[in-house]
Image 1 (tube, rainbow, N blue to C red):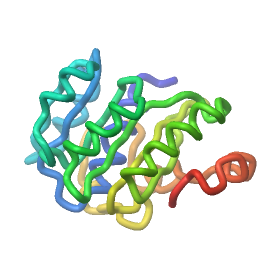
Image 2: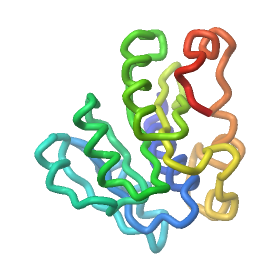
Image 3: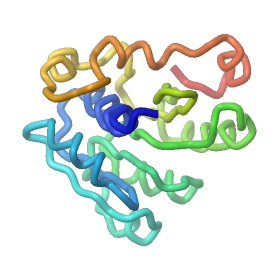
Image 4: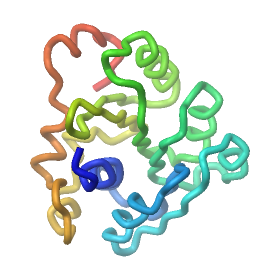
Length: 181
């Protein structure tokens, strides 16, 4: 995979879905590429923490508009992420391949306890991420002005933003009732 696709898609998809993001949390053991993408969004503050439940527990309630998570997520991690997200927040997270149906269904069912919208999206070369949103839909509520005004991007744009949520029928059928869009 081109090294620029992953960080651009993990950052810009959720940030360009939120109406007025002001504060983003990155949960990663190596956040430098994600931080570089966040710097392209003038006026949006961000913080990075290491992938640990203790670090997540230390964060205050409803402080973040967007959380970008590379941490292996279970029910406890998702509960803490939901707690620190604002009422209209988004979560972009890594997960197992969509071919690992049982693990993903379990993860998506946990996410469904906290988020109105749960949609996988393509990162390229067969890799996917999950976008979970408490309010905004990633294809209906994309902020076109923000997505089109970003400089120095190699992959992401408003057309790609919408296109990456298209799923083949076998994925739609396998996850029917689990993906919430």
